[in-house]
Amino acid sequence: MNKFTVHKGVVAPMDRENVDTDAIIPKQFLKSIRKTGFGPNLFDEWRYLDPGYPGQDPASRKPNPDFVLNQPRYRGASILLARKNFGCGSSREHAPWALEQYGFRALIAPSYADIFFNNSFKNGILPIVLPEATVSSLFDEVNAFPGYELTIDLERQVIVRPQGEEIAFDVQPFRKYCLINGFDDIGLTLRHRDKIKAFEAERLAAKPWLAHTLNG
Image 1 (cartoon, rainbow, N blue to C red):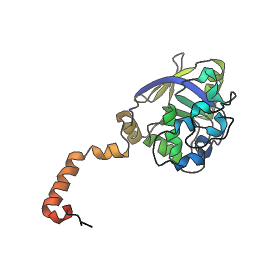
Image 2 (image 1 turned 90 degrees about the vertical axis):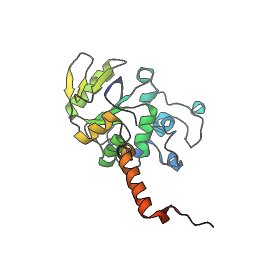
Image 3 (image 1 turned 30 degrees about the horizontal axis):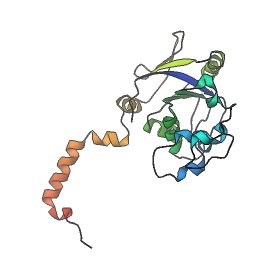
């Protein structure tokens, strides 16, 4: 997955509490066995006026002009500002896939559902937890200033406002290590590829019949 060190981006406000994973990526899109292609259907039922189904050409859809991500001032947003309990509902990993494939690198909210929170880290998204009062002040600023941007410095664990004020945030050291280095679960395992190869070679030498296959 992509490394996360310092990221600066436009902020989009999702001013709703308890946004669940079915709203983030509706159930009909979970039929795909691939891990790609979910970005166009992020928040599908809110983002479009027509019903969505797998395989549609996004260019043929009817966008909802009132939905936040369809508004010109939030075009290209890569930081999502949300209210409490974001990502609740079912544990589908497709939700962070859709957010990441749309272009979001970080989320800011007072709280998240536990499974969604963990899945976000594993898919290269940084979910930041801030007090509700701080989140509300950020909503006020985003609404007041078109093109509002924040800079997120993961190594220093601070969010930098446009005027230079810094907001500190906490992140578990292991999760921080994985994001900064771009390690998902497979990447973490592949750090030990030489030891894995050595073990497999030693095992094969001791038990050569493991290399044999039955011919039908």
